Image 1 (cartoon, rainbow, N blue to C red):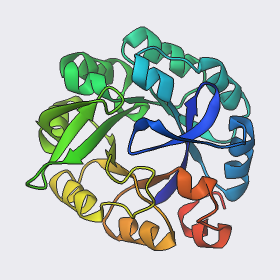
Image 2: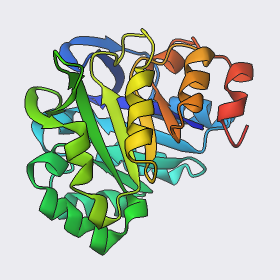
Image 3: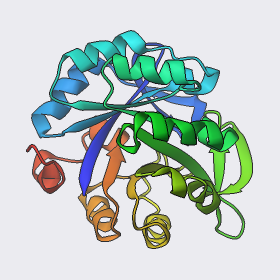
Image 4: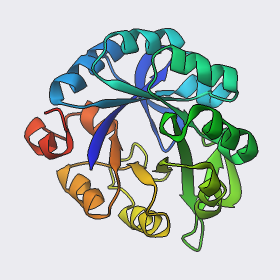
Length: 246
């Protein structure tokens, strides 16, 4: 399993939200460029970059920062937030992103997104499904920066793309995101069991190396970490098994 550090951008700054709430924001006095250097030095190969303004407003807001990070080289960028049409997707790839992350549109217009798989190839696209568990423990999809809740289950959302060649899925348990309460390992074990052909990326709740080992044992391909890395809850020695370039 590979650890992928995350940078969330809002108003040009690095922030973290608690459970996707824009009113529960923590700002960090570090630049995206400095974090890029820090994670490169740790031995990461990928950097997950989220344009929170884009996710909320539906229009990409941080392309110059993404271009600047891509020019630094070494880390490959996985970029999401506000990618709601093919022109924006292609513009993001042209800016240097190695993968684009498609969220809400994969729920609201799956046929359109499935066409992108055929045109761009499955290695360039990650589908991001953000979920909240309902009263029965079923993961239901949240969309539009987590402000809207659908009745669509995670399993039905993924199944729509089986014929399109879907390879990468990033799944965030919204209730765990930014809370340092531990990841929902049971969710990811179930996901891997149902769709073993997919490389699952787990997001939300990672707090220490034990969580990374638990996710690894569950069969996920990658774990996304934002706050735990930003606040120093994970040290370089603990991270080494999960950083291929370390």
